[in-house]
Length: 412
Image 1 (cartoon, rainbow, N blue to C red):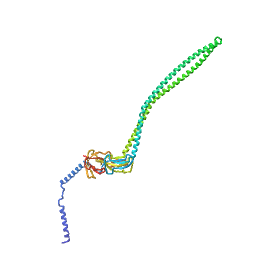
Image 2 (cartoon, rainbow, N blue to C red):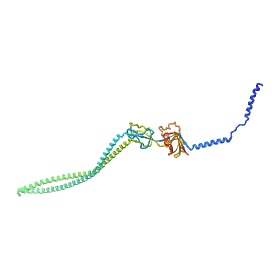
Image 3 (cartoon, helix red, strand yellow):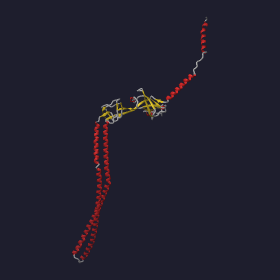
Image 4 (cartoon, helix red, strand yellow):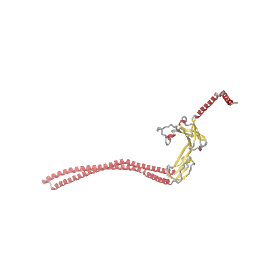
């Protein structure tokens, strides 16, 4: 056999095999099977959409609770600490004791000051009626003095009229005696009357001159007396007016003094109550029930008012703060049921949406975003939703603030 014949044999067989392959019928996909697959996928997509639209979930959530800091309300030195971290306490249970000796001394001082103010107030109360009686008596006395001064003025007026009448009478007698004297003087010069009669009429005329002078002096004295009595009356009237005008002010001043003493007594009473409170503040009691943490109080340490001693975690009042995206809140509202998965316990609790947020978390952060810089990039914000645990569930007492949870809210 030649080389050509040997080479052509295999090539011919391969060519025939290829021809047989090209001439075999092509497989086709069954349309019914393809339609069934498409239908199943469509139904699965619709089912998933309907299911996923019924709830909203997030893993950005944690258990929250009240953390009650317990602080010293007064300055003092710690003499005893009754609790330690992770210890359960109840409301009113003793926590820390402060040295009470300084507060006992302050209480004694406040009590003494209060007793003194009360005694002073008790002594001031009788002064008010005494002042009223005294002012009334002063007014009556001044009225009597005015009446007496008026009577003295009237009497002086009568004396003045009498002195004026006497002066006029003596002046009239002086005129008559002077006339008689001049007449007897003419007759005496003619030797028609005796010298004794002449001397008698002369002496009478001269004596009458002295009488007129005395009556004039008495009239002037009476006039001065009237002026003095009138001034005394004016003085007594002024005193009466002053007494009447000052009487209400004296009473008012006394009333104000009593009011001031009353206020001082009340201030002393307040200081006494404050001293009692400070003494009571030396016994630091638990304000709520819970578990102690962050205890910094140590025996012998001096603390100041407002200094934190420890923290009490209220484990009986817990909730979940779930930070949902703002795009998840469209159909969420209070009252919707929630399934809460707790990572630490590997179990699920039932809950209810309690309230919707008032602000986004970024707005209340220490450094809120500033979007007016020109470099704004839109970021979907998260908003804290509060979720309450349904009461009466098992293992609620094992929950602690800060535990990570994954809540699922059923929005439909």
